Length: 166
Ligand code: NI
Image 1 (cartoon, rainbow, N blue to C red):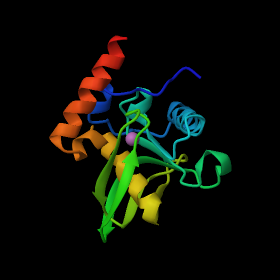
Image 2 (spheres, rainbow, N blue to C red):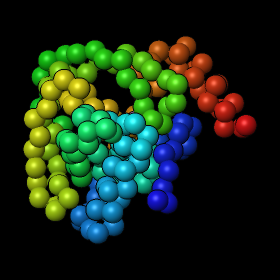
Image 3 (cartoon, helix red, strand yellow):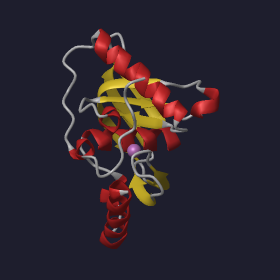
Image 4 (tube, rainbow, N blue to C red):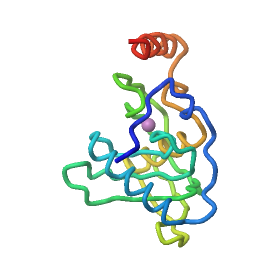
């Protein structure tokens, strides 16, 4: 595996990711590597910018790294429909030791392409819906930090910049 998980303040995390033009072999390989990295790091979701690729690809598997039973790969994902409201305590592989509460929609329908380039729609709720929203945020360059208050954000930012220097 050549790619690694990028952590804040890596600038790729703040970029708006580019749409995938065609679901090529390279994109399929990228998605496969993302899923492996997600599982290896005990994650339930990952977005391509988190492995250094500014492209609109996400992987989600809320069954977790032990079970690996519900892998969803979406290319150029878009949220079509949101319903309800929920608040969850979220973490992110790109923000070690950071957690914050985020208001999200309770149910979302996400549209995108699968690994064969076919258009698919996924209706999701609960943790899976939250996960889709979190990963799609990454494609816009939005991190959990941006959902937190200024004080919390600044404290984490100072800490992360210090880690980077060491
Ligand atoms: Ni994240």
